[in-house]
Image (cartoon, rainbow, N blue to C red; front, side, top):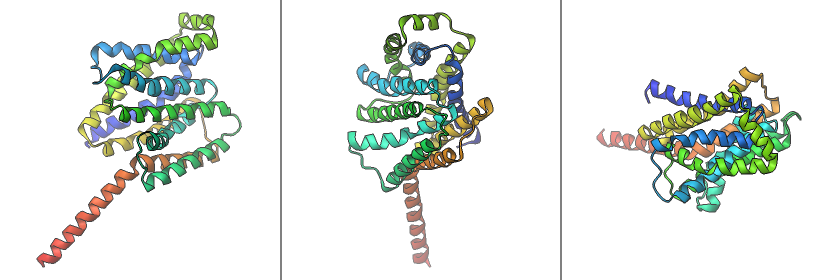
Length: 306
């Protein structure tokens, strides 16, 4: 991958990592479910310009119910409940573990040995993070973030199970299922007066945060990412996604001075290594085996020629 394309991948990871601090800033004065609805109202505004994924619309909406509605409803609620944005960017990467576990039940896909190791490391890392959260992070916020990761993982599995093409089209069209249900749910939980007041008193920060998450994170981020996936193997592009929690933690440190406890830092390292093993382990093992076989064949040819 040329340097400029690698830079584009790093840029996307940075945009996605900073997303968590931007969401936290934008939540001021707006119920979290209303804020998610606002984000996806902007996202679906691109529908006239983005082709709909092939197949029945209900499949696209089913994926959106998990990957868009569920994931972000829980994530925004966790940030509103006191989850630090840097730690949220880290915990959300558990989606890779949830994807493999759910795929084993729904798709009968048996995890590889290295993926089982990654799952154990991810769960252990999460446990250490939970123990080392320092007492100032509500357990409810941690559980909400985990629920968001689980919904993301479920969405990944539904994409494969229902055979829905991914990409920017899925991001945009699946957003149709988000605004009305979440506005209705927020009206029930927070009260119609609170929702109406929030929608009629949006600040510049609310709008800038919405623009960032919808335009940069969704449109630009997924547009560049899918372009890279179209040009290069997934095994070459996917590792850059591991930069997201690093960007999230750095952004949270620069913006809020957020620091992890020692235990949370150790747990975070275990979690990221576990996620890397789950996501990239099988591909790396395959590449290693192919390279070893190629070296063995070359050695045999060299011996026979001599």
